[in-house]
Image (cartoon, rainbow, N blue to C red):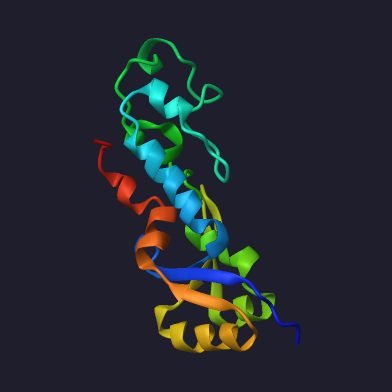
Length: 162
């Protein structure tokens, strides 16, 4: 058995009612990008938010900076098409497909298909202790952080940005 030395963050995804896993090495930075975009007050500010890990759904390739999307117009992240459609940020529950070993995906998860947003791995909360123990036996560092997981999923974006 190959030992991994990856650090995973995981938690209860409120939107999906199951566990979700993410690479802890980039998760905090990704959450900061989501928060920075949500905090933008104008379309101009939103377009200037630098994204390293995610795409910027308010960028000029999505919203031409004129008329209702002019730089000085008020920005509300909940009115961005990709956010309204549930496409941004990407579902955090999809990440298990890339960060968890295949045999653990098969044993603890169930592939769920969504019509618009693709597949995600549903991992029952009841499997937490056993799955986390198995990951740690394989050399993974595993930390629970429900707030981070829900930030990555954009769960707090349901209310207009201040």
